[in-house]
Amino acid sequence: AAVQGAILVTGGAGFIGSNFVHHAILHTDQRVIVVDKLSYAGNRASLRGLPDDRVEFVRGDICDRALVNELVTRVDAVVNFAAESHNDNSLADPEPFISTNLAGTFALLEAVRAHDVRYHHISTDEVFGDLALDDPGRFTEDSPYRPSSPYSASKAGSDHLVRAWVRSFGVRATISNCSNNYGPRQHIEKFIPHQITAILDGGRPGLYGDGRNVRDWIHVDDHCAAVLRILESGQLGQTYLVGADGEHTNKEVMELILRLMDRPVDAYDLVDDRPGHDLRYALDASKLRDELGWRPRHADFEAGLCETIGWYRDNRQWWRPSPEDSRV
Ligand code: NAD
Ligand code: TDX
Image (cartoon, rainbow, N blue to C red; front, side, top):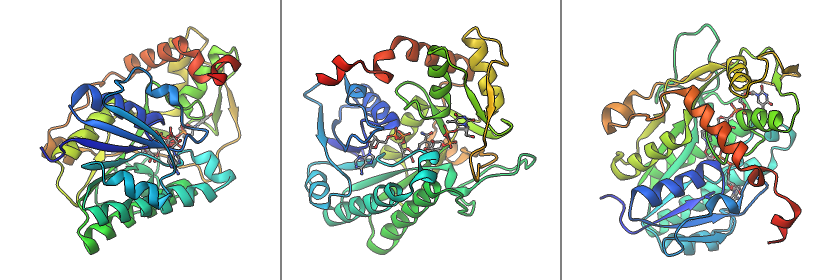
């Protein structure tokens, strides 16, 4: 196999990173080192229940070049999930997006270059900007980069760094650009868990603008399986789009959540729109399907959403820790 003993997972206490660590422990015999600085978005509880002899947790910053350099010498591959990930935060204060998403990627690239370690870069469909609501097209690997927000611009810049390190230095890297993920352990700042937890708390959820914006949803497990497949069999230097043909307007998703939670489907407010709000994301994952044989397993969005609602209902202490929890 392309990857042997151990993987360094950056941002492994975050939403997708922690799901990836659980996935890799279940589906491979790899050992995993997680490095995560435990920003507001990181949660140590997301890594509970994993075997101690296969998972090591290191609290640290991917911008710390000495730390990253040392960790890279102990693994066969790096998967970089660590990022500032929320568009609204990037509008309020772009600075951490520049340091983590750009300087952090730079630190990792220099380390994998020095030690010739395989690198996989996690990115987003947002680097391509948005599509018009009436545009029948979808993003492909060849779509031009046209990011809209400080977040997506920092991710776009990080992708460019990876490609430059591949071409100029022969770094053995791949990139994946995924659509909007949903599932367990997603920070409640994000749309789906934000609405679910607002309803569980007895509040009224808010839809930005008129709710016509479209997102292309994929279950986080399907994203994790795709990343593992690319790590094992992806062609070096290549980019793969990851998506599961899951386009829905925000209004549709809001109404579905309300219905699944036994609330009237109009029990929400329209609130101020996000400045620069991207209209539509949609991506064509044919390359990943045709070349690597990946298929999404959670094709039924309603069933996946129902399960996700159940997870937030059953894991209130994860998203609303009590004072006793924080003292442990
Ligand atoms: P998240 O915000 O839930 O998790 C990010 C994790 O990175 C957190 O645990 C945080 O503590 C950690 N982190 C932040 N800065 C760090 C630093 N400097 N050093 C070490 N750790 C640091 O994000 P997520 O939604 O899991 O996204 C993970 C990756 O996937 C990001 O690169 C994001 O751009 C990409 N992505 C996300 C989505 C989505 O829908 N959530 C879709 C496509 C791509
Ligand atoms: O309260 C809300 N109401 C609302 O209508 C929130 C938080 C969001 N929205 C809208 C904005 C978006 O159109 O819902 C949609 C989804 O919003 P987010 O969850 O903030 O995601 P988005 O901006 O689409 O970006 C996400 O997908 C791509 C992730 O946060 C990124 O990390 C990823 O790269």
